[in-house]
Length: 264
Image 1 (cartoon, one colour):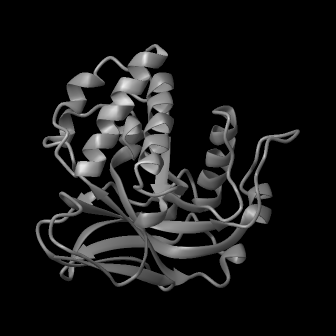
Image 2 (image 1 turned 120 degrees about the vertical axis):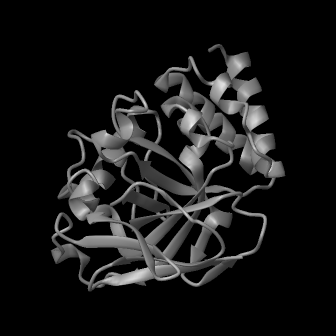
């Protein structure tokens, strides 16, 4: 795509987000898009959402952490996308009718970044990224299907629009995260007491700190970096689970803590 085509697609997506309308046209519009161009569009969308008052991008999310998620979408690996100030909410948040358009949830750990993670002499690892983490929390990502039939939307089409991102729910602070075995923690999500999905921390690229290091390196490769104060959704232990209707939903890491929402 040339710069004009990128700008036109970004304008259209940003307007769809602003008006909270169903973008059933996006699958066809991005059917032949490359991953490289998809990220160019994503960054342009983020700039436009900030410009129209949607809110400043306040961090990032890791998506498609395992091959079973990204391979069917014909992506080369996991993906990343932006999250916004207006979408960072505390546990217990109530979403009124009308937004998200069709809510889904994912069980994730949330990181708050203590200091910038710029390019260095070597790529970041799970060990070296620790120094850049201020806190970790049990959290939930709220995603939304703003496309009609989301199954028709390919990987690049999801990347351009922040991979279904709607909100980041920050729950219980994990006090002793430095000594946690991230691969063996067990996460689960439920709606009105019924389990929707579950999985081990190993599903997040082998563990939360591994995915966070991956994100730091991928951002650098794209001319960006993790910055002090940013919030990061580090990847879900299970695929997104769309809620069957209104009610209370909860994501938890067993024995560690949880995050909850109510959708009207």
